[in-house]
Structures are given as structure tokens and as C-alpha cells.
Amino acid sequence: MAGLEVTSLTKQFGETRVLKGVTLGIADGEFVSLVGPSGCGKSTLLRIIAGLETANSGTVTIGKAEVTNTRAADRNLSMVFQSYALYPHLTVAQNIAVPLRMREMTSLQRVPVIGGVMPGARRQKHSIAQSVARAADMLEIGPLLGRKPGQLSGGQRQRVALGRALVRDPAAFLLDEPLSNLDAKLRVQTRTEIAELHRKLGATFVYVTHDQVEAMTMSDRIAVMMDGEILQCATPEIIYEDPDDIRVAEFIGSPKINILPIEQSGAELSLFGRPLKWREIGESTRAMQMGLRPEALRLTQSAPHFKGRVAHIENLGAEIFAQIALNDEGLRVTLRASPAERPLIELGAEVGLGFDAAAALIFDADGKRMRKIEIIAGLTPEVA
Image (cartoon, rainbow, N blue to C red; front, side, top):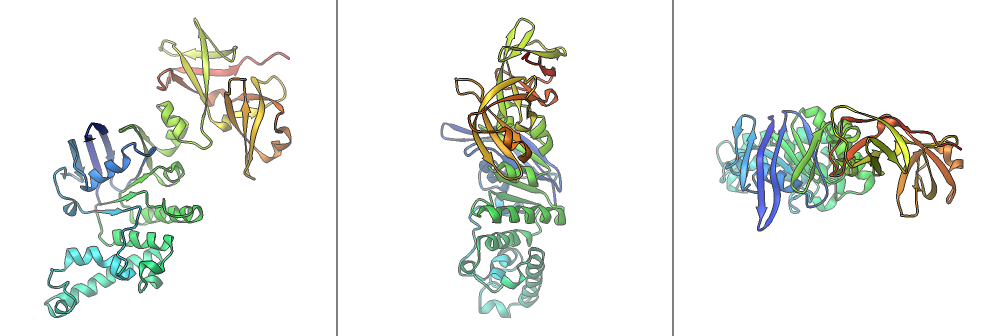
């Protein structure tokens, strides 16, 4: 196994700049997810790492070797595609064995009739069969080895694709949205299996997805990409609780983070005309926005920080999400409430809201995080 590093990668298709100087280091044995909206460049970055695309500039290093100009077959990487890419005429065992047959057997040894009598062919086949059996046992697909892909479910096909990647003993695994063809229940099950496989192998995984839940639940670190750039690469906890950019804050988290405008008059800050208690540590104030996760808001009947009307309710059983309309201009916030608070939330009802000042995230007008501005105690409570 080995770590990966890409440095100042750029890629352009015609006039379109897909990657804009991407730099990312991935440690040996680390699980890193590349996450972002469609078209942000994450799959292109993965394909450049794999050697399936050529960068316009920049370098790719695997372990201590630069492989920027090395062909894909010589990079010792295993890639799992969204479409599984299984051979329909081969059995599961034969599909898993394909990379080993190509690497360990000569062209004559692979010929169906003649190959069986070639020197060393029997030994090679036995070794390959053992490797296939080990991979199948690890993925619990031993009983499927004699079947063909058309006889398998989507989840079973995904395991076969993983098995084919596993037998190569690669320097790293590259997975390009491998769960997107599965239904919701199978996605939950298979992402658990992939995370457990990573822990068993201690291997380097680079995982591309647009699904933030996959990235948050499986990764050691998440690299959030937008418009051909990595905005932030950090642990799931930091990405969620301490984002560097408002685009990261808005992309990660479901429901989406609430963004509210902060008004400024001289050294005074206010929210919806109400003063904010705040302090500044060596940073000049400017136009600002406040980010509040749905769980940072709370219902309160006495001295609310601000008020609104319940516009929509989503009851998920273990938790309730309520959209609260704050004014006539369509500004809404989403509140995460407990089932015990359901009687307090009725469509059209006016509710009072407070918020956890320590959880407030402050961004400037350009969406960059302002870490030296600290909200101390929320709004001055409204006098009834």
C-alpha cells in the first residue's frame, strides 16, 4: 500500500478549466472522499490519478515515485467504476480473476486449450484460484463464484467489482461513485461493507461521491470540491462544525445550514434589527453573514431572539424538521426539533426561536469564514 499526492494539477477541456491547480496529499492507509456537486471536477481528478486522463500541468506521486507520465497499467492502482464494468459472459470467479490472469500469465498461458499444457500454467491457475477464493471469502460472495453477472443483484455485482479490485493487492483503491446505481437500503448496507473492508485492509482509499452522507460516514477526511478547486480538506467533524467557506457549510449538512444576514452600523452588529453581543480579535468588521445549523436553533416561549411562522413540517419519527418563515420576503430557517416538541409546532403557528451563540458561524460577504469574530450571547432578549 502507498500514499498519494497530487500537486498543482490543472486540466482543461477546450476553453473549460475543469481543475484549477489542485493540490492534495493522502496518507498511506487513509480513506479520503472527494465530494462536491456534479461537474466540480472530482471524477476528472480521480481519472488523472488513475492515469486514464492526462493533466495539462502538475504532478501525481504514488508512494515516493512520480507517475505523472506513467501509463495506467503500470501505476498498480485498482479502480471501481459506477457501472461495475463486469464481463457478462464470464462467471463471478472469472471476473475477479481477470486482473491476475492479465498480470501473472503469459498470452499463451491464457489461450483456452493450448494454455493448459504450457509450462507453469497449472501452478499459476491454482495460485489465482486461491487469491479469488480469499477475496470472495472476505466479501462473503463465495456461493456466487459460479454465477454470471446477469444472475446477480446490484449489491452483489458491486461486491464482485470490489473483489476484482481487491485481488490485485494495489497501492491504492480508487472508487468512482460506486454506490450510485443501488437503491437506498443497499447503499446503506454497502457503504458499511466498504468502510469495514477499508479497516480490514488498512489500504489507501480515494472515494468519489456527490452524496455527503457517504462522505461523512465513511471517510477519515473529506475534500470538498467546487468549480475545479478543493475548498477544504479535513475530518468530517471539522468540515461540518468548522467550515472555511460558506459553500462548504451549505453543501455539507442535511437539512442545509441556515444563512442569515447580519446588519452593521459602525461597531454595532444586529440581526433583524436586534443587537448582537460580539467581540472581535484583531479583525476589521465588514458585511457579514451568520450560519446556524438546524440543531443550533431552539424553540422558546419566553424572551425569544426572533419570531416566525411555521411554513412546513417534516416528521421523520426520531426528529422533526420545521421550516420557519421569518418575514414576508421569503426568508426561512430550518429548525431541528424533538418529537416531544411536536405539539408546539403547528402549520401557521407563530413560534419564538433562540439560538446557541457558540454554534454561530460568521462569514464575510464573499463567503469566507471570519474566525476572529465571535458571537458571545446571541441577541439581546426581546422585551415582551
